[in-house]
Length: 357
Figure 1 (cartoon, rainbow, N blue to C red):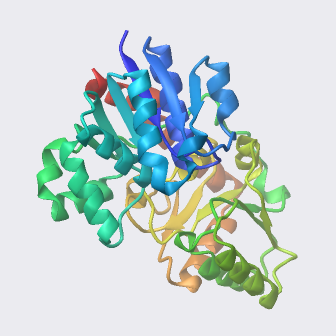
Figure 2: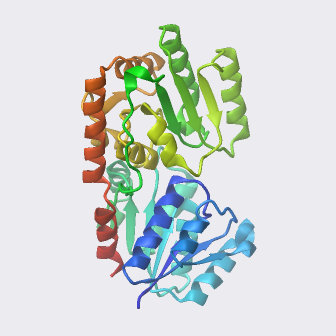
Figure 3: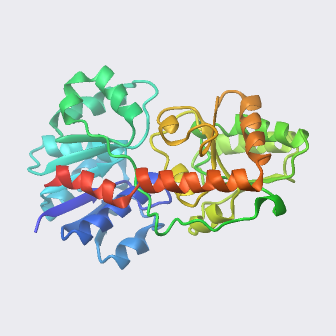
């Protein structure tokens, strides 16, 4: 039985963590001996792995930067995997170094975002990728970036978009004209998510007389940016229509209660939350960046906007809010159709099986 080690920083409430946990469970179901290795003790998704009877190692000795590579190298060697699959930049770098230090395993590194500029760390990362077996972006935008800037990695590239459990993320039909619309966003409070411009768009939408509630679920490790968001929220006096809430473990219920899902990010990979919302039949209003136009088509299953233009964001939300019940239901059904076609678990695991075998 082939042994596969899935390696990520933590089991916290992030999109990359959700995808890796799902991948580990699917590989286990296919008969592989699967283990998950992390170095930060955040148990948000831990129970999912426990329920699937997947061994989880939390290497607390590897929390400090200066000793992390050494302790992760020991953990990998102890398990002696045939394949290591790593997610996120730091685990990708560590796994690549472990491979260079004599690791005999096949190494698959996954790119979960879209690179905006090449830093010194980025150059180091892509140099280390010379030793990996596959580089797996979850978006075509990131694949094209790597092809343009690091041509030696072209033979290793394989795009695998995110999956959604469409049997879990299911719609509950709402009667939109008789319910106060809920505009939902799920995402970390970071500059990438473009929250300040979004708040200005919400202020414009409110000034135009719309009745709605906008809710943002997500945590942050950027206290300075979070404070800036709350300052603008207060300045615009939006507390009656906009609310920040912590990340929710019952996110499917939040999608099902939503009228519109809005993602105002400046850049993305393939956003889990966008795919999950669509699977729940929630029409999308999102930034016209990266791969989003592959997922959302104007007037078909949502609307795309310029994330730098608060007026455009407000306009596209307005278009959604003035839909008739019939128009809204058609758009909802199209979201569900696209999700089942593009984000199926079968497509996802079949793609990974072609490179782990």
